[in-house]
Image 1: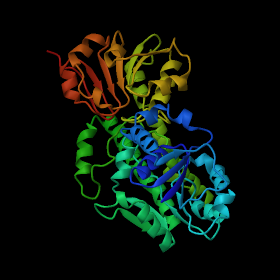
Image 2 (image 1 turned 180 degrees about the vertical axis):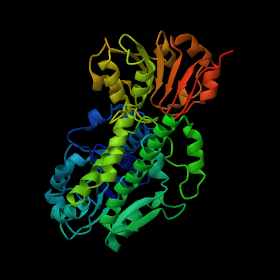
Image 3 (image 1 turned 180 degrees about the horizontal axis):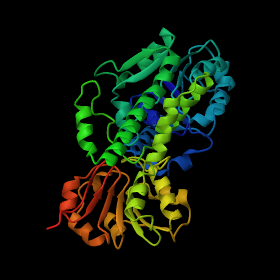
Image 4 (image 1 turned 135 degrees about the vertical axis):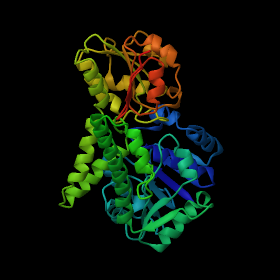
Length: 431
């Protein structure tokens, strides 16, 4: 099929690489705000496993062509939109192009963007009734986008036209062979389902964080509670890990979009508002633990921070807890020594010249040299099994604050360190 993709999101880049790898003729028009010359140098794209290599292979093989503008004589079978929520006007402008809006019948519009519920219908009307449309919400996992597109656990397909469904099944047939991964439903249902899923996941995380806070107050190890809850078949273990808050360009954005949908429908969602509030509060959890430990006397302290990305496997810091944490530390006069294997360039760009407040280092242990305490913010695999004896010698106050509960409190304490997690704690046992 002849496919025209529009956008500069991770979902656009992944679709371009994947569709061109299985024989489709793909033309990719990056959004004008982020042309290819900029996009190709983005850390988040360069660090996605296999993705950039697949794009270059498709370009070299001729299956993928990068465009800077759309031509009047463009002939396509599929228009695939994967844009940010702020780029709705750009989508409308593209679909108003004469070669699309007034072309021959048979073009399928694929809305892979997170737009308001009902937006696929509106965009279809711009193209014209002679074409068809589907909503295909973005369900990629950042850090493994190629794998989640080419071996999907499911596709949420919002489709009100059997012909459009048939064409999309053919478009994605190469990625749908092990079993039928399509879950077909009306367009608006698919758009709302994407938002509702992330809302439910966020609610589970925030609820578990609330339980962790209660466990702290009651002197209970929240790990026992988590294991007990997860063993209940009605609940399960997924997304029950307490931590110092979630972030990311999609997750947080989808929650806000779902809240907007509620308001636009005349319905206030106290639950969603509370979930968002809890998450923002939890981004301050590690700071509050540090503040309590030092009785508010943080001026002049040096704090080691491991991790800045909103999750392991990505270079992005969108809505990441580290941003809230750094501002709180700096406001109290603390200096930060920070390590992250991927997100340092993005963090440098976000915080600007703060040489007096933060030192970016190349090694996790360099971050801990002459530091008072260590705060783990992002659970990169390289942080899971550190040399605890070395850290005990580096950290002046031998304090470890684990924002993701990845360490064994008793083992850390046995190495002579004081451990503070989310709903967990342990102190060295005197000899």
